Amino acid sequence: MRSDLFATENLEKASAEPGMRLQNKSMLKVDLDGECYARTGSMVAYQGQVQFTALGSGGAAKWLKSKLTGEGVPLMKLAGKGDVMLADRAREIHLIDLGPGDAITVNGANILAFDTTVTYDIKMVQGLGMLSAAGMFNCVFTGPGRIAITTDGYPLTLTIDEPTYADPQAAICWSANLQTGYHRADQLGLGTLIGRSTGEAFTMSFTGHGFVVVQPSEQAH
Image (cartoon, rainbow, N blue to C red; front, side):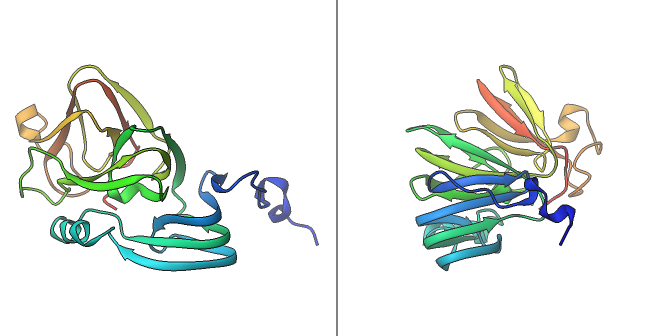
């Protein structure tokens, strides 16, 4: 049988050790030997003895915050031994390795999977109040461990050394030490020129020193 489907780049790649590896830009392979957390519904295939358990948004207190704010990550726990393939609507996947004490804030809509060694919590983004459905809570991950995030298109990483502003739907992750806030677009002279995906004229601000990753899309997830 002959087909481009059987080309080398489309074949499953063997893993040298347990953990998360990219199969291609839109498919994550978890060589599971223990436990891992992943976004609910992200499994596209698996081999071996694997159990899937729904976890809501990661504990009762976090679940409550996620219900009140619309944020958080609907999680499932993967447990056992085998290979699990994860994806999220063909979005591009990027791996981030966190060292001990490293922390990153991520938009909950962009989380795909993370190691059980990573600490996860939901924190409030200051400055918005209850004025917008764009979300005033985001997810903070602290290492050590690996996390996998998704982007709608290929992202851009901005170095923050002066006040920076971004559409809340385009900002997908940033240094946890940055000070954040929300502002009405008309305060910045933008009027109704941003927020076209949600109809809300808000922009997000970042101050301090660090980085912000933005995706080339402002579509709400």
